[in-house]
Image (cartoon, rainbow, N blue to C red; front, side):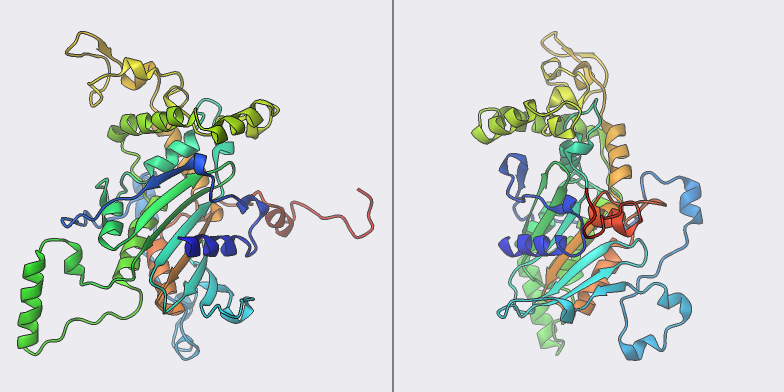
Length: 414
């Protein structure tokens, strides 16, 4: 995990703005998400659809072919349309300043479909493969009527996507491959990351439909028939599968209405548990002393009341799965969202406004070559939405490059 964080930190220094400088060890804003292996893992669905796209949008979008950057020999055989789909290489391995013990190879690319910037790190000797997605959006971006929305949004992304709608799909896959995941929400940033063991297995094994004994019998039968076990080249099955599931957070999350109530209560419990921690208390004291006009004064964690815009969790009892007002077994009344309102529309708006390639930076480390890692990333993350027209990130270097900010000349008075 320390290697993953160091790679993420390294990537944030590569041309990104000061808005990406954040503390990954902000414990009071970190929620562990470690799940155990599930032998009955099954993939659900194969269609990726943007939940916010209209039918017209879907019909008008042409199919996209994902192509890795070719070698010099291969490039001469590409036609002009294929060449336009090549990732742009922003930095090669020779341009990195590395310490003497560092034998890894690095590359920074910009994906052709959406200009997503990605740092790739190839380490054939690593026993941990990992990825981290950094988002330039945090609780400073919470709307006034939904304090803690960025934090709640982070929770909800783990609970199903269009391609993998089953809630535990992502974390069960990581558990099956010796990995784990985590995320944190900070003031101006949100970070999601995972790691897996560099395991290879047949696609059929991912389905979890066969017992270990059946798999052993099949392998023995193949050996008797002179058939060798399939050898996989390139990105490991564990990393490729994890990246495919991980990428859907940023392509087609569900924000399932049926899961809102339970996750609201999870955030509320996090808030209640943190109130007695000294670091939470110190942090809130700093916020109380800040100007109310500055976003630092915002309540970043959020609780049931703020996230439902006035809801009271005590008004919601055992009828959590029902909508509207219904009479419970003990005669009390169950009120949807405690009398407040659903945050789903604001979740979708937050994701739409903030979770596009202009605000995202991805870092991936694996055993595979840089070319293989690049191909896997292009396939998995090509569906991320590009930044909106005219988008300029809110960082000093970004604004300078866009001509929105000009540094004073040497000797010029301030």
